[in-house]
Length: 324
Image (cartoon, rainbow, N blue to C red; front, top):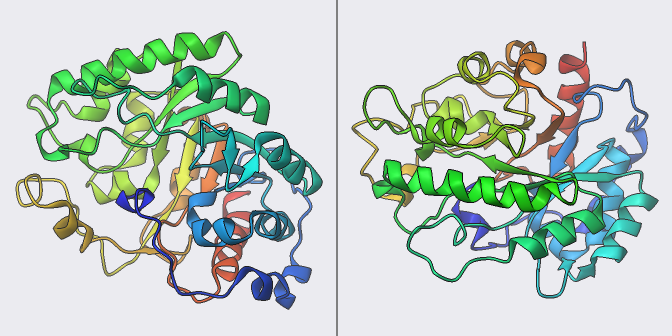
């Protein structure tokens, strides 16, 4: 995901009620075709953040009708133990009513992972909420964002230590901690060492899993397959996100590593899964090597006017091409 997590911009698009009545919903085959992570594909709800903020109940009902089997949450109000004004028990009931589960959620840990922040997020509270929702993973969606161009080896080592500590706390509730990457974790520190490598090397596999964003690793100029080979079993979750074929230039390297964030974001454009530049069929062959348990469709920005049509298009591709 990108910086827009912090700024929930309303995007033009079809309202929930109108989209919910669209006839395509009733032609969706929602029965599971198998037991693998692609058959039972999930969605990161950030993809449809405006719709779920407007009407979470109808939005989740539509997600279930399309065929998705589980959802990854974001944007928890920890003090109220709620998502989109639904208390956790209410959200759990909506999910149950629509045949949906939630195995994972993104929980802001940017202060917790920062060396410079003395006030930290309440990880224990996150664990309690995740446990009540039936989640097996609480995922840190991003590093501290205040100065990503000057992250040092020590920052990643500190973050890894913090993830281990959170993992120890979560283990008592039967939950694991996860980390989700963007592009800057692939910037080099010499000798081929990158931020993501530091996190992988300094975290304990029994406590910390990784959620590989297939878009961002490709946009950084690396391949998911290379990381699955190097760190087998560590990437139990994937974000299946596609890249517009006109925007494939990597954004890691001398020309970009000190560039402004908004300048870099001009080089970013997403598209529906299967319509872009990423070879998901080849990557899917590495699911066992990676240790994949849960896969989520995600599209940070949807440009189609009907966002439900967009996420159905991605769902259909996964079912047609990745479940073989």
